[in-house]
Image (cartoon, rainbow, N blue to C red):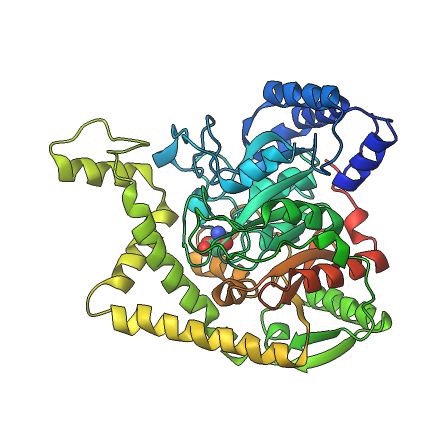
Length: 482
Ligand code: GLN
C-alpha cells in the first residue's frame, strides 16, 4: 500500500473501495515496526487488538463515521479501561484503569482504532519529553532533537506516520509546542469544550485534551468527535454541538487578524520571526485585515502559570501515596515512612520540584503573596484577551520562540525550559482556544509553528483561519524522512 496519511484521504480511498480498513491498520503497524526503534514515541502498542477491530470494521461495512477504522494514539495520561495508563511515571507503572476517559469512549464509539499509548513528560510536566521516567522520544525531523512536550510522543507518532492522529493534553502548551516542533497541527480547545473525565489531572483549571493531526481538516473531524457536554466533568460546558468541518472552506476576506506586539519581541528566534512575517503577508494577500494589538500583562503569564499549575499539581498528586494504587516502596517502618519513601522513589525530579513549589505557594503566610497574586494576574490576562478581541477575530503569533532544541540542551536549566511556553501559557490561563499549524522550515529543515488564538468557543474562527492558510501554502504536506 502506498503511504496515505490523513483521515480524509483514507476515507476517500475507503469510499472508492480502493482499500480496506485491515490494509490501513496493517500499513500503520508495519510503519511502527520499521520506525519506532528510532522515534520511541510509544509506551504501549496494541497491534493484535487493532487488527481485530479493523477486520470487524470491514465486515460491518459501516462507513458512516469519518473516524471508522482510523488508527490513532492516546497520550498515556488518558485512561483506557484494561490497558496501563502510567503518565510515564514510576508511581503509576502498573496502573490499569477500571474505566475509560470520555474522549476514549467517544473515539471508540466512532469506530476509531486505538493503536498505541504515547510517551510524555511525567504527569505532563515538561516541554521536551525528557522528563518521562520510561524513555526519551526523538523528533522525527532530526533524531538528535527533542519532539517537544509534554505530548511529545503524541506529536512524534503523527509526524512519523505511526498513527493517523493522536490526542494530547495541554495545560500550558503541551499540545501546541510539540505540534510546532514536529511539523503537525495541534489544537488546545476552549476550557470546558472537551470532557476531562478520565484525564489524569495535572492542573485541573488549565488542563484540556485536544487533537494532534496532519492537517486542519483532520483536526476539525477529530474535534467533532471529542467535543461535547459530559455530566461526569463538572467543568464541561453544555452547548449545542457544532460541525467544525463546515467552517473550513469559508471566505477569509475581511477577517481581522490581530498581532500582539509583545509576541514579536526579544527572545524570538530571527528565522521563526521572518517565517511568521511571511505568514502575515500571506493573510494580507488573501484579503484579511491585519491589526496591531497589545497584551500588556502577558509578561506575567509564565510566573502566574508556574504558581497556579504547581499549586494545583501539589494537591492533585497528593493521592499517589502507595496505598490505593500504583507503586509502593518495598521496605518501610511505619505509615509516614511508607508515604515518604513511596513518593520519593516514585516521582521524578521535575514532579517533585513542582510539588514543592506548589505546596510552598499554598502554605500559610505565602498564599496571599503568591497564589492569590497569581489568581489576580490570571484575571488581568483574561481581560487582556477580552480587550484584544474587541478589535480582531483571531490573534496570530509564533507557537514557540525557537524550533526543536537538542536533546539535553535545556535539561539542566528548568527556567530556560519553562521559557519555551511563553506564547502558549497565556491561552490556558485565559481558558481560550488556540491552534498551532506548520508555517515553514528553518535553515536546518526544522518545522516552525504558527499559533492562532480565538475567543472562548471560537474554535470555528481559528479553524477557518488555519484552513485558509493551509490552502495557500503546502508546509503541512511535507513529511519527515525517517
Ligand atoms: N511545559 C509546560 C509545563 O511543563 C506545559 C505542560 C503542559 O501543557 N502539560 O508545565
